[in-house]
Structure formats: structure tokens, C-alpha cells
Image (cartoon, rainbow, N blue to C red):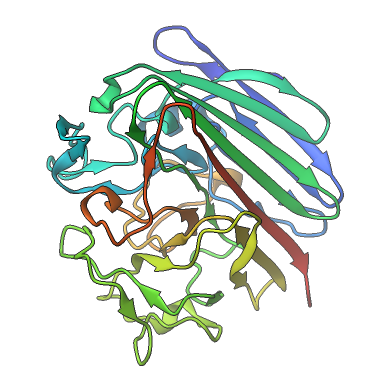
Length: 332
């Protein structure tokens, strides 16, 4: 464990580096950020990130963080549970709630509970009414490296009042070290996706991917999508008790492949079109549009407004559970 920096109020932020098999990962106690991920024999980090805490505080689109207590967008920051209406923090274009609000768990210090050579556990306590959400909530995050080259993520959460919960790991991946991921090949096991309006809020339709440019059932390059069609959408799968394969990312330039497995019923695919950081990233690299792709297993966005979406409600006494795995290999 190493001191990484201080928050404005003096709170210490620590880093923990894990090693197992061919992977090496560094996590921060701020936002549970995956600050760096390295694969033996590959000269570049596999994720976007910074070496300076200040850059995470001022110039980061959730690089490597845990998003929640409700990842993704909630229309108008409006939540109604058991007949009671709650106004959530409207931190997205001044209108909608994104990733749990302005002071979300991805932008807060966590308790570093324990760590070993290959795993680390964090926890955080949220108060009733924080960012407008009902219920005191305790969230636990465990990150473990499994030999030869798997990053295993387990999220759990409990509450003392009926609320909603949706957590997501928000790393941006770049498997080549190049300035963009447009030549990466993406495959997604989904037959449908959620169309959105011009404010990125789901319309409520579950649209078939047949004959659609977003159909990635067969692998194709990310650059095959016209740039005027920003890909920042939820792809629809099914909730499972054990992780199932949902996506594969591959870089022909490096020969590195990443498979994503998850228990979650959806995966948000964001190709990073709006990345526009001013600070140098790992190895001094600039990070602009399409510098990385976020593959975020989660529940569906704005699900509280759509009864036909998977249920996001968490009851007192229940435990929210998610397991997601990113499996890396050098295949060329």
C-alpha cells in the first residue's frame, strides 16, 4: 500500500498493486479506481488513467471508477418508489442523474478494508438522502486477479429501506497503445439494444439489432460505425447467477484480446467519442476522442421508469450482487 495523494480536505488516498499470473493491477481508495492494468509482454497499459490524483479530481470521465449508487442515467433525476417521489441530483446537462449524482461513489474516498498479493476489498457507506436517493446503503467491492490473466470484480450492496441500486466498473480499455481504438474488433452477445433520445435517455423501446449498424454479434471494427452515430448504448442480455460471456474486444495491432463475462442483464458500450482530457495520461499519452472504449456490465439505464426493464429495486434485507470478469490473452 502506497500513498497516492490527498483530497482537498486532507483525506489520504492510497494505491494497492496486485499481481497474479500475467496481470498487474493498481487500484486507488478514491472511487475504487483501476489506475493501471498491465499484461506481461505487452508494453502499454490496458486502461486509460493518470499518475496524478489531481487529474482524476479535475479531468476524468470516470476513468477506472465504480459508478453508482445507480450507474448510467435516470431521466429528470426523478424516482418514485412505493408511491413516494424523490428528486435526485441532476448532474448530467443540468437535467438528468448520471452515475448516482455529482458526489457519486466514483468520486468519493472508500475504506480500504484489506488486501493480499492478488486481491483488495473496499467498502463505503452512503447516507439516506445522499444525492436524493432513499436508504442508508453499504457497498462492498472486491477486486481479484486470477491466474493466468483474469480481473475478477465482485460488487455487493445492502440497504435499510427500499431503494434502487445499479453498480458498474467504468474503465476505458485500449488494447493496442495507439491513440484510438477505431481498429479494435468488438463482438457483443446481444440481439437487442436500447435506443436513446438526443439526451441519451432510453426511449423505452427494446430494438432488435437485425440489420442495424450496432449489430456486433459478429466481430467488426469499432471504426465501422459512422462517427455521427455516437455509440453510447445499453446492449440487452439476461440476468444470470453465474458470469456468462457478453463481449470480446480484440486489437489486431497488438494481438491482445479481452473477453468480458458478467452476471448482469446488460452492458453499456461507449466508444469514447466525447473523451477530451487536457491532462497527460499514463506514459504521458494524450487522451482524446476514441482513446478507449468502456464496456460496463450493469442493469439497464433509467429502469425505474420502464416496468418492462429488469427491476432495479433493492429491498431492505436483500443483497445486491454482481460479478464481472475481464479475461485477457495474447492470441497472436
